[in-house]
Image (tube, rainbow, N blue to C red; front, side, top):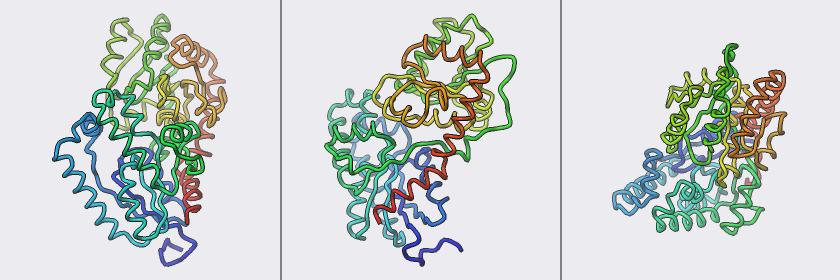
Length: 385
């Protein structure tokens, strides 16, 4: 039997709504996960507001004062309004991330259709702007983001959160009640990140970081560990990606004359996946910011999905989802000595390394794959119908 909106009750019809980042992992996982469920129909109602990360940074830094930006906002939301009018009947609306600002229009549209509305919060827009220095650069913009986010969080019938730590932050900061939240874990897109036939080399030990060089990633600890391991030339560090901290981290490595560190910059997806598959260890994050403690970053799940042992900074959030030295190897954050000790142990003990990699992969498949997250999301959304 094919999916059909003509069968009442059995099907869950979801309107996935907003100006969300269409290419962002979280949205792609939720959309694919919901569509993978046997009794779910998804209608995509999306319009693009933000061009890229640089555009969001520019507007958050004060660029929103330009009348051209407000014309763009009006045009985008008019486009969303029209798309929603063309969307078939649905049971519940789910606003994709980031969608705190979309809640205002979404609430009007769902009231009009007498439907329930959920918002995938994932991360706080104000906290992200704060940790990237944008609120300090433009305090007025910071206050505006705070107020818009606060209002947008109070409008939905349900908030989808990754974990209890972020729920507590939202409750304290925006005066929300815990009853407004339901858990949908984060994960990786296992259509892309999955074990490959490629194996790590035998003549060296590869340690790999991939990401966007954010302050929350704590890459000074990685460079510090590379300094401590510089005499052991068989251990090689490889960095992939671009981001705001890349230049500073490269300079730190150059100042130490590290020849056990290679910076590859941005590479295409196949090259990155092959590189992760060749790694003995994949690195997570080691920063001390609130954001780094409140979520389990994409790179952690992606390393697990590739079937590789992952070393990352310790936190209560990580321990809620993964067991130390069983699914992941956790170390004290911003501690090069602790990271060096972890890498040395995993290099010397291939049995432990493979056990962690295998158990971490199985835990990922069980709870954090596309199908698992889709099933959880369906169950949560059905509580609103």
